[in-house]
Amino acid sequence: MKKTLSTIATALLMIVSLSSFAAPNANPLKNMNSKAILITYVEATTLGSDIYNKYLLTEDFEYSNTSNNDSFNKKAYLKFLKDNKGLKFNAETSYEILDETGKTCIAKATSTFENFTRVDHITLNKTNDGWKVSKVVTTYP
Image 1 (cartoon, helix red, strand yellow):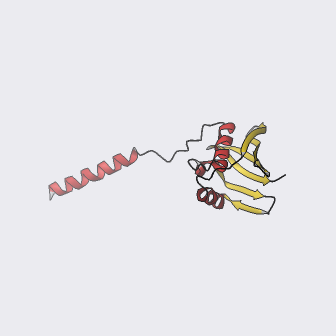
Image 2 (cartoon, helix red, strand yellow; image 1 turned 180 degrees about the vertical axis):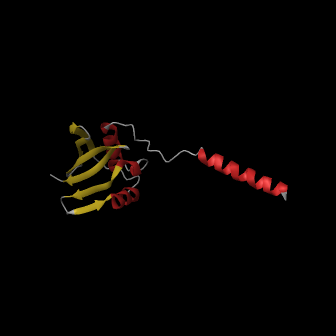
Image 3 (tube, rainbow, N blue to C red; image 1 turned 45 degrees about the vertical axis):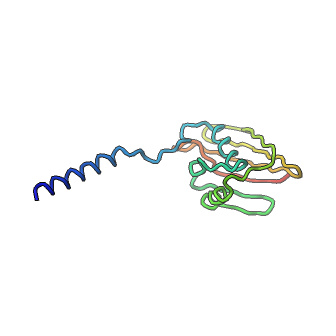
């Protein structure tokens, strides 16, 4: 009986010790600047990359498409990106930061396809967890 209690106590101690060393689910994008976050977002949308999508968006993220009045929250947009993983735009894509002041950044990504152009106006905010995309408005000029 004494040996059984000793074995159980040792096992519990090992479980508690090992779990205390487990790394938390840290955001790998936390220390990146706004330009790096913008590039990561553009890659997610135009190259079908989904590596860091869950870290890219704020909790109150909003996406809207002005051509059809669609709008999505974070959960719906992450599902859309996941469903389109690996889908690559057949377009030339460029981006630019239009303004960055304090904890807010406004950027523009333009994808030029053969017959049309897509422009995303992207708002980024600096949070306690680093830069994140908070709003995207897509237009087709």
